[in-house]
Length: 304
View 1 (cartoon, rainbow, N blue to C red):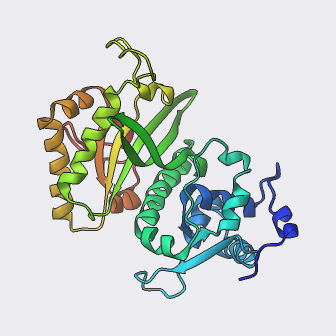
View 2 (view 1 turned 30 degrees about the vertical axis):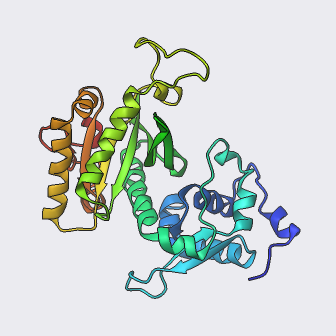
């Protein structure tokens, strides 16, 4: 593959017009990886696949993106796209990515290891984006931040698969919502999955201690208030197994809420829920497909 020239880099430099090629680069920088179809749904939901494909092929010829085939797709022409090191470099100055930590996938080896989970996270984002368009709400490509990490004390961190920001618009009323999103492909044990709730409970209670100062009193502010006006919902999206197995994993999440004192305290203040990804894709996340982890009947994610 030819190395990008300085002229090619200048052609893809940021501009106020935000042409599609820059949006594609920004989307791959933020979301790590996506298929052509996913990028079309994300950036041009009313456009053609060919439009996005032409842009991707042009960026590949310039050396800014590359692709990896999806061996389990059943379709030999399906690929996942990711940034090359040069593509990652030029996205650092894109205004839309300012302040977002870069976690790019810039090699075929890294892409092959991360493809299934990364694409599942993108699938999850797309169901919320499609539902928002249908309902007249606000949630776009830049309202979804993958791999967000927060300290929870003792040198440990909780890493959310994504943080979602969403604005529900009902007449003149605008309701701003946020959520920590965990996408589970049934590749970890059910106990480890449920253990993520303990990590979020620790984040909810954690107060960062200034270096060299005495420990703050209980009246100190929680560390998460540096980033969120209210603690985000915690929602689990499950896929990759039979309905029975996914149901068992949801039951284990509910058992953690009922049995662990820190998680029970979290559930009294924060909305917690779980749903099956295929149900979200078929019905939409605004339908009664979310199981409240603190108990109750299925409901929309906004009503957890």
